Image (cartoon, helix red, strand yellow):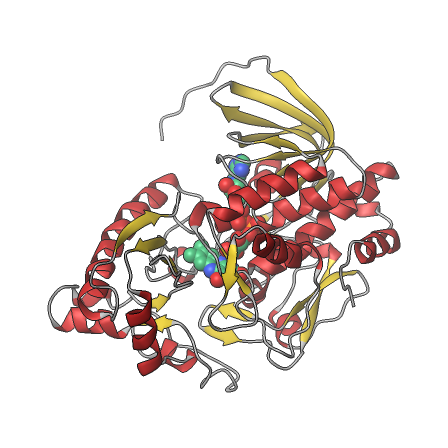
Length: 454
Ligand SMILES: Cc1cc2nc3c(=O)[nH]c(=O)nc-3n(C[C@H](O)[C@H](O)[C@H](O)COP(=O)(O)OP(=O)(O)OC[C@H]3O[C@@H](n4cnc5c(N)ncnc54)[C@H](O)[C@@H]3O)c2cc1C
């Protein structure tokens, strides 16, 4: 490929702080809150105009749809996201679990409020583009925005971009699932104008279960058996019918999936129905194709719902997520990489920084934590190799494919994020790097912040 040389330039240092958190999804938002609450100065840098990551930017509202009576989990900031959203009118009871479904729009306000209350420096509309390095140590970041390039310096940096952007550009080893076996990307949408009563009657008349996920098309599904007869807000039949009637082309038998909340006001939200294979979230050309194809398929899905789903006759598109939803990109090669055995067999670790219920969702597996089983999450899975001054939180922590199907879940990202934030505060206060942090002190502050770590 032809190349040009960019001239070197001087860049303004707009902020110097203790901790920079890059990315504000469940991982980054929890990290920033935890660090600030542990008493250090924090700047939270986000490329979009709102905090919340996939919750707000993509419209992923099902924060804890795995929760049942016996489920044991960490609590902490992830749980606070739900309760705070509920208190602020930005969550409704979720249809298949003992949890609250977040309102993707309302959560923007919840996140603003949490950031403000914690005294975090909010830095929206800035995209991280390069690390500032001192040898092998990350000492800050360069962002691009309408103001051009700016530098932000810090004692420590947390990469919560979901794509390990900072780690990757700093030279830490990362890996990705090959495109052909990556988890599908999804263009998410919400509907307006649905007749709630007719829709719910239709659901009750023909309830779907998790077993139905495996009914051809996109998924074959491995469960532990106990999930098979449980209710799932799954929709496929209207799309099968649309294929039979020639409305949807047969190769789009991947259109199927779950609905989120049916609001009294006629909005049917978190429509997770479009699954696009081989979309690489680190390649803008691939993302461009995914966005356009995803919107095309979403409009076909809406037409099928209008024709064949009770209550949807007058439905119309309310909105798409601000961006395509990506499930699977870079993961770091960490000091410890979590394994399939760790997530299937209740992994236990000396350096546990939180627990996560046995919830595995992805790569054709669905296991729900209905029996109280849970795994511990090791601190070392956030520590990248070769690079100092950096911790990675959220879905790009170290682990194999199947472990990703557990750790990618939003409430797990929040557990890990909270620990990253506490570790950063502890490291700043003791003038140490992430690799030398006093883990007993981190665990004790996490407990003080309400996290169950064993
Ligand atoms: C369609 C879909 C449905 C899903 N359904 C569920 C579900 O029901 N339940 C569940 O628990 N999980 C679900 N997931 C998975 C879950 O949403 C993600 O794995 C989780 O949000 C990851 O959290 P995170 O904090 O690591 O990253 P993200 O939520 O992706 O947040 C990363 C943030 O970093 C910002 N960012 C990225 N790069 C940069 C940069 N260079 N500079 C500045 N900012 C940057 C992004 O804008 C974003 O705000 C779903 C995912 C998708 C795509």
